[in-house]
Amino acid sequence: MSIYWSVLTVLLLLGITAPTALAFGFAGASAARSRVAPLSWLGRSYIAVVRGVPDIAFFLFFVIALDQMIEWTRHKIKCPDWDEPIRQGNDFVVCQAAKMPLGDAPQWVHESYGFAIAVFTFAIVFGAFAANVLFGAMRAVPKAQLETAESYGMSPRQTFWRILVPQMWVFALPGLSNLWMVLIKATPLLFLLGIEDIVYWARELGGTKTARFTDYPHGDWRMWYFLALLVFYLMFTKVSEVVLGRIMARLTRGQATSAGEAQRKAT
Amino acid sequence: MTCYETVMAYGLRAVGIGERLLPREDFTLCQQFTLIGSGMIWNVYFGILALMAGFVFATLLALGKNASNIWLRKPSEWFIFLFRGSPLFIQFFFGYFLFLQLKTVFPIFAPFTAAWLGALVVLFFNTSAYSAEIFYGALQSIPKGDTEAADAYGLSGWTRFKRVIWPTMLRLAWPAYTNEAIFLFHATTLVFFTGFPAWQQRGDALYYASYFADKTFNPFIPYPILAMYFIILTLIVISVFGTINRRLNRHLPDNARPKLRWRPTLIR
Image (cartoon, each protein chain N blue to C red):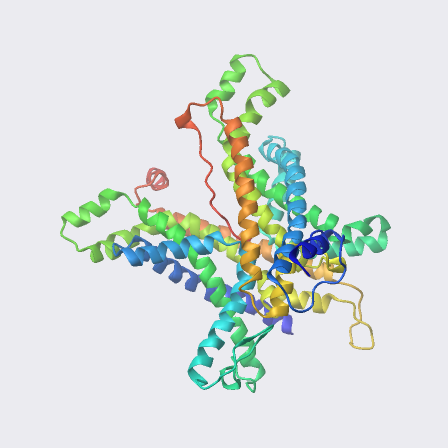
């Protein structure tokens, strides 16, 4: 039964991460474009730092780092009169009240806390990549469009929201769809973050079962479970490809690009 | 233990030479640097071998995908789609369990269940598929004038391919191929986190880094060390590929030469 839930977990992760990462990316890209220097530096360094660090290491690192950061902050707030050092040699010790989640919390809280951290990590990493794509897309919007808006007396804010943002998507979509494909293919890494996802269950359920412990004894079926996962991901990418192709066709309509031109001629 | 002794004991630990027991307590910075560095041996091993073998196979696959013969084209297309469409992580798992099953039937597959060969095969197929797509794209964008010039000189068949098509394909594909190479090195870190067991704790750099992070509860030391090693490796790869790139483009005027730019991709 749990394997069905774990498929939902993966879909849920995609469903939550994609918009969150897009929001992160949008914020990062607009910050990098900003005319206020510190904000621009912040946006640019966010993009540069996250994209520069090797991928999986970042996932492994960030989950522990984030967890410790939260616990450390809570520790500082909740137990101000704690006098022992937090790092005692090999241990990371915080007071009981600062444990996250609390030691006596029910199981589902622990699980969803782990899940939330995983989602956040994914969002940060993919947000940086999305930011890079959107940043490029914003620069690809023809300059004349922005200048026209300015000459009509629009403020920079109006230009940004009414001219730049609606037009940038067609330039961003190839990059974003690429990112979506990569995001789909990154979901099995959830397993590394200690979430009981489909990889975990494929290993558990596929392993050799003897008649003593289960009603359905079978040999080592893990190969077939992973074959099923492989097919699942292949189908998922194929469907995404088709859907994204349609969206692209819809967005190209009436745009001043060569694909838009071709569409105009075809009709 | 002085740092020199540590290097002597653990420098080649990843391939099984030196001290057998990993350090268990009182981890020093030197130990972390040495062990993670010794794990890099595996990353470099997987990366270089998969890259070299994959280069040849990818060229064949790209030619196959570009062929007009349907019996050549369809299998290549399917191979590329299969390995580019699914996560490498799942491919590793599937490969490992596939080899386990095969081992029970044909004992000849026994070495494939070990990381040094099994993971290498998976990485080889994977990088072949990705590189083949890059090469295929390059084949498609060979300037028409080049092939017409080859025809005009009376070149045909193998000579035409060797003298004109192949160098031009490589030249066009090289910047993207450099990224693929860098990326492959990053992907090697996945090996010991999938089914493949790290026999006698001989693992790669990330394996040791996460060992230290688990033992010390302090991710802020081993992972930055790992990142440092990978940045150095990336710089080496870029410089080697940059040299080749200069050689491939040596006939072009300076301003027409494509520059190598590292655009990092992410998990595959």
